[in-house]
Amino acid sequence: MPRAYALLLFVFSMVFPAGAAAQASPTGGVKFSDPAPIVAAGSTATLLPDGSAAAPADAPPQVQAAIFAANKLLDKPYRYGGGHARVEDSGYDCSGTISYALIAARALKTPLDSGSFMRWGLKGRGAWITVFTNPGHAYVVIAGLRLDTSTGGVVSRRIARTAERGPRWRVALRSTRGFKARHPLGL
Image (cartoon, rainbow, N blue to C red; front, side):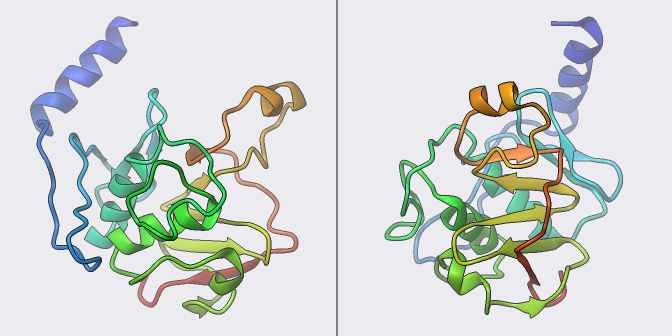
């Protein structure tokens, strides 16, 4: 591990000590927390070397909560229907992943499928959170980072074949062609 990265991790651990960031839950007992939430300066989320995201310090608390919650899903595999029957699940599909983050942000009460997201929220892009959806797939951009279960937008075919499917933060945005943009009120 490079010294600069190790020093950065040490500084973050001193400024943001590990500990649960428990929140009241709209899902009847499910608690969204992150053992070590990281906040970075500015208004754009930062992709960290471990694949998690640092929430922007300038973001509203709901946006930070969505990022912290989504970070909990990064070790989960893709599973069709995952995150719908139970919010806390062993695997997640595209809309289950988005639902998990939006429930933590208190922008959604129960999970939706990708087709239902086409009628959810308000039309167009949001200032902080935008869901891109069509009847077969959905992904979300939160504070500038894409949370997606597909490898869409990955530059190389070789990388796309080896990239893991499942909830992942991605820096590369993908084409929005064929998707409708929706966003939560105020975000």
